[in-house]
Length: 178
Image (tube, rainbow, N blue to C red; front, side, top):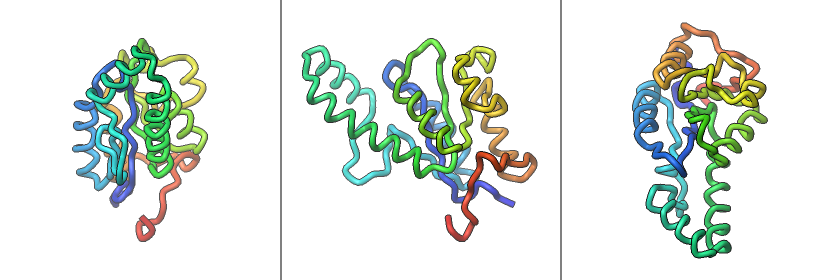
């Protein structure tokens, strides 16, 4: 049984104040071995996509400093639209946060996905005991992990059927519809 084969996962986590590309590459590689397509905001799958990388962020921050708010607003509305669309089309979410770093896009993606009752595998820097209290009321604590490795091992167990999925959050299409 390969439960996660042909599913889609959105990889979210702070990008503005901390580079998040390296951990995403690790997760993409491991999930790829399970047949999961990972959507990475650093490498968006859309035609004519809006880039979201370190260079773009530096440019946007410079525009903010120069009070070019209309330009930044127009750009970020498109980034937001694309990122939330990736949440929409994903079967589950893999998220890494640092509780000490405010990350508004990640917060919205978590709440957006939670409203759709998608499984969210949340990795908290410093471990579950450092998880923001508000998120403890949002995400079932069994989906909150101390490390990326812990969350990946759980997904691998789900994939092979060693760990039963929670039907309240998992709404996977039958294989022939994926």
